[in-house]
Structures are given as structure tokens and as C-alpha cells.
Length: 245
Image (cartoon, rainbow, N blue to C red; front, side, top):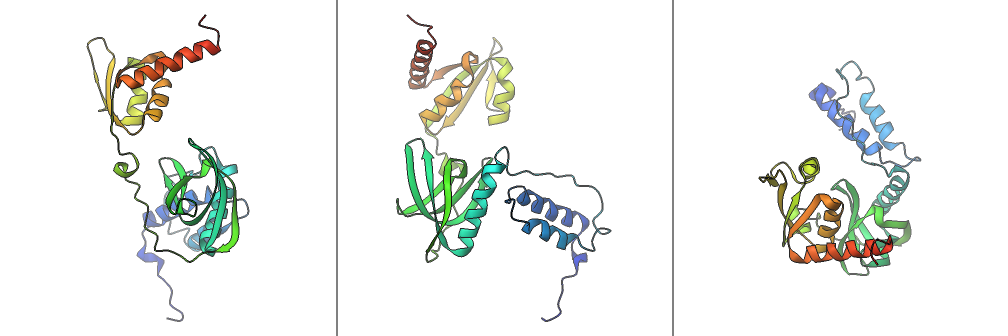
């Protein structure tokens, strides 16, 4: 109705603080040319300074280390989603580099990283692309008819289906890493003080890469294939640095 306005008193002081915390987190990844979230926070705060009591207790930075490169990509993708324009970019994946064009539908923050979910014209299917692997992201002038795009299923079972059972022994001083990455119940302490770790992993390459970050502080028990790969990698590394003759 004309002249209707929402009475802000229906929101508590805590409600307002949480709304502002959310807006600040989005502002952390907004481009330098965008002041939208700042203006929105000013609108919410206008005339509410006495109503909002207490100090900020939640600070969220969604850009991590990558704001200078991340914010411009997010700005381009957001604009393309609003305009229903295709975006194109160069993508770097373990399988190699490729030029992609997609109908972008969702910007996603998951697993401490940013992704874009959309319909890939090359693969003729929905795909999830990691923004840090994207380069030369541009909005084209090619419009597309909006599909009934499903919300991406980012459940652990869908994205990380498992299938590789790993068992490994870690030195006691690596307990903090195991707790940080898998929780305090992912291992048991054996008689010699080492930590017997068990988990279900999705792919061998990621498993081996992760295990090798521990160096000599981890010994793989299973699977045997992982042991063989790590041994070959260690031999090749020694060859590079002149450790084997």
C-alpha cells in the first residue's frame, strides 16, 4: 500500500546486528566500484543507532587472501546473472585448460572457497566452477533464456562420494592437523603414541597429495596403491635434488 513502511521495532537489537554482520560479510567480496552493501547498511542503520545496542561480535571476511582477484570476478558474475548474459572464461583444472561459456545461475560459497554454478554450453550439463581456477572472466552480450535451474546439491555424499578407505599412522605432533581437518574422533592413539587415522576418501590423487604434505610424519598402511605412489614420488623428488645415484 502507498505510504506503508515496516516498523523496525519488530526486529530486536540482536536481529539487526546479525543482519548487519551478514551485509558486512558480503561487502568483504564486493568490487571496489560497488558501494551497494555500504549504502544498504547505511539505510538499515539510519535512525537506528540507539536501537542497536552492544558491540559487533561477529566479523566475517569471505574473501580470504584473494580479494584483489576474487571481487572483480564476483562482480562480473553477479551482473551477468542479473542480465541473463553468458559468461566466458579460461578454466584451469587437473585435466587441463579449457575455454568455457556458461549460463550462470548461482554464486556459491562452500568449503571456504567461491564457486559459480551454471549450465555449461560445452558439456551440455550443469557444472560447478571454482572461481580461483577461472581467468579472463567476462560478461558477453549473448542473452540466454533462463532455465529452471536446480539448486546445486553440495552435500558431502554428492560431491565427495568416498570409496577409498585410508588407514595411516601419524606422529603425535600432527594431532592438531587431524583434529582441524577431520575432527577429534578420526583417530585412535596406539601404544607407541602414534595416531591411527581412518577415513573414506574420494580420489587417489587428492589422497596422495594430502598425505605427502605430512612428509615423514605420516606412514600409509592402506591402500597399498597409495604407498606405492608416495614411494615413487619420493624417489623422483630425491632424483631431482641429487639424493639418488
